[in-house]
Length: 513
Image (cartoon, rainbow, N blue to C red; front, side, top):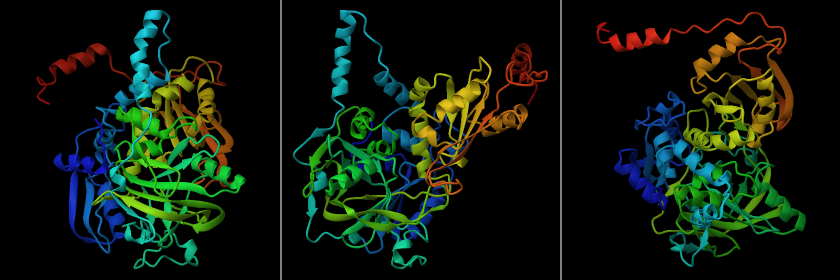
């Protein structure tokens, strides 16, 4: 079972010994993020690494943290809540991520009923799926306290993550760490609606604080929030936006998922939860938000006004460049009584966002296999910062199959942004980076096995020739077979006989080793 609200999740972490409470006063400007950064690189406190995941990097993550005294603020701050395999598993309410992947696969690829009786048997499943859709309710704890005219964003313990965050709007000078001119909401779900259909979207976009009622929303051009913004801009209308902090424990992950536009994040969250997400109507804008949220910020985005947002210390380990992004004007802040403010910090891995990425890698593997059936498994290594590198395992059956898979992946959703793809044979463990690199070095000839193309890349990739585009590299690290160019005799990989392996396994204790 997942958890119905943030504080329930925090209590569960505390009871299991996965949470540390910091009772001395800390500064939301740089100090909280520095502590969380250091904690994320500590050994994991839980002994849990689900099947099909990287066992080495799963040892990191330290404790979840709750800062009870934040300088200048009344609300405690929670961070690193999702920063381990066990904590992300708890948040999603599953035994392991593979189980969740199978559950999702059963809904996106159901067996086709062939008889009337089979159709009847499917009815309960279809009813259950319908029950995952979000449900409107009249009241929610997220509106136990409502601030409108006197609302002030600066009263929230919004953190500054890195020293030069948000400096572009202040003359390009380094941020004054005593004032925190680069404070960002980093773990808020940004709720928008399609102007034509009214369909909701939830995205995890960073939001920079400027003053008591003003922020800038950073969404990339391919994000659904940006698509909605372009609709409102074309119509010359102000765009209602809500920023949601907390709620059901599945919501932060659902907001990060690379779902297609026609798939609702709230429906997906309901599927993860096993029941509908309850929503309440906002007080000052035409939007619905989770009733169980800790804090909700309501407001409007003006399509005619933009602010210089950034730079921002990003998940790539570098500052992303400043640019013009939409201006958000707050109209209300609502919250539950005694709320907890959730946040996160991104930067040089390993950090909390790595586990969101690994959850997506595991959960979406069955869907990737549906698009590219050749794929057996894949791994997005930590050093690749999600989009830079992918290790892919295939069962090789014909010449140039690895090349085909590379190009298929470069056309598959978010995998289109992958800069380097390495294809290996089925016996290679893609979650063991040394195993992959061994076969990369052993099986490739640079003059024959490299595939270089040009295409879209992550806009945060500062090394690309163009903003959001440039070169990509595919490496065929599979065993070469006839039909793949000039190939010499290919030797066998060293391997002991099954009989000897069984003998030493049986006699190991006898050897005194």
